[in-house]
Image 1 (cartoon, helix red, strand yellow):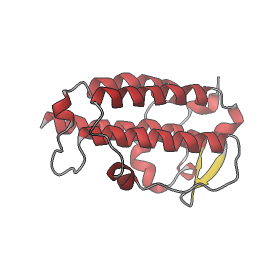
Image 2 (cartoon, one colour; image 1 turned 120 degrees about the horizontal axis):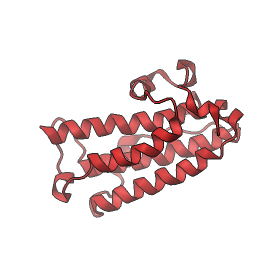
Image 3 (cartoon, one colour; image 1 turned 30 degrees about the vertical axis):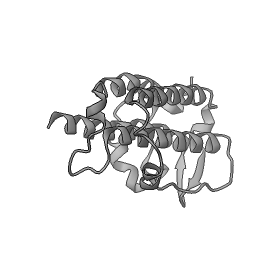
Image 4 (cartoon, rainbow, N blue to C red; image 1 turned 30 degrees about the horizontal axis):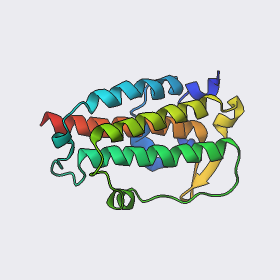
Length: 174
């Protein structure tokens, strides 16, 4: 398998503002962490449809919108990983998460449909990541004016979801 996927990225492999997400990833095997996170995701979001439609202050997004954001992020960052892995030299644009949430319809679908969509995306992304050549995990690309490696993206996918699941867990506990 890809040994490079099993080591944590160095701080020069991603933008500084991603550091809080990176700190949430302690696993050394990123592919296993990505796969295991599916159960963590489903467990945290084992809630009613009505609870998923609540916005808990001070947060402005409902839990369904948070799940939608996780779907958006999973798509955008997997695309970046694919492009960087094949050494595509074209700089990619950033994306504004608030615009994506504001302009997407997460309310007319069920929470289960959103969860299913995320899980299918994650499984698809795992298939893609598992076939990346070992040396390509170190490939760098630029998006939103910032350079990042493929393995940093894989780590970010874990840490970003974990960050939001912790917030959702705290919201539900209060």
